[in-house]
Image (cartoon, rainbow, N blue to C red):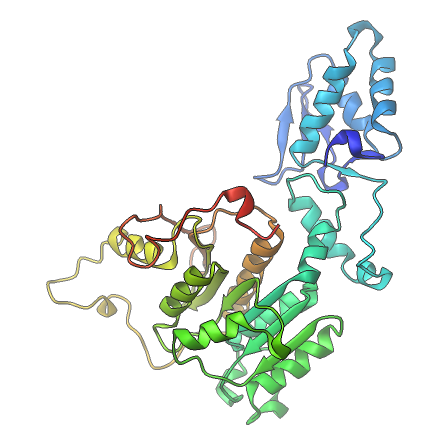
Length: 391
């Protein structure tokens, strides 16, 4: 999408520019990672962004800037290049673009606020600001685990308009679940979680196809079977979301299967006050095994010879958790799915991020280079970052 093909180029409303005290033009909001500052000694850049208000064609914008700055004798290609630069940076949309016909008027009303958030975070040119929402509508997501983390992730994805969500969960609702698994109610006690979850999710958004099965993942073959066939014999899934913590080796299985199938995946959870999500795409950055090995090497637990690392961070037969930690981890998992499916915001996979609730401002960020000796991904070919996501 270029400025030349736009009917009425407009600076995105969320990226509205302003002039600083020294005459520079700030655009893209004051959010780190989005905003930029442009020097404007002659003032014509400010005129340009003002003229890009969605009421003019590209030619009319050029004419307006030239008219208001006759003394500068600005060449038309220079003005067009500035418009192109702003478009390439992600600050411009086409106010004259029609919304995709695949989205009904009802869906556009329902997802209008989500569209504007995606538009705010989107830094790539689009034919329509609705394109990311359309990608989400077409998406097929497999979610394994519908407890605290998984239930929150499912809720957020269904509310956001994911097209198809298939949930897998073997357990029944117990009283001790209700402090954090907010999809369930007291009247669900003793009910299979998958049944109660499907009822709640379908009531939240009837436009999303929500399916599920009561099934325990017992090995890599189960995950492969789930990923390669949707209910009714449909195609497989675009993304795997792992919110199950049993058995302990399930993340290794997910990594193994997703590497073999070329499927992007994410996993999330909590460790006391630490809440995080890991995001992985085969061939792009570290795999789960790479990241885990790098983190083990990075930590200095000062263990005595023969001591197990559990002595430094003990595993207990119960999960210290509440609705906040479970909900945050689930929302981070849903956010990871949106990044993988829509490409907004752009992410370099092979990382884990999150937050430490004990220390506000102490963010969790783990990243590692891909390890050439990794037993899991050493044979997986590298993927071009521009073609490696679903956007």
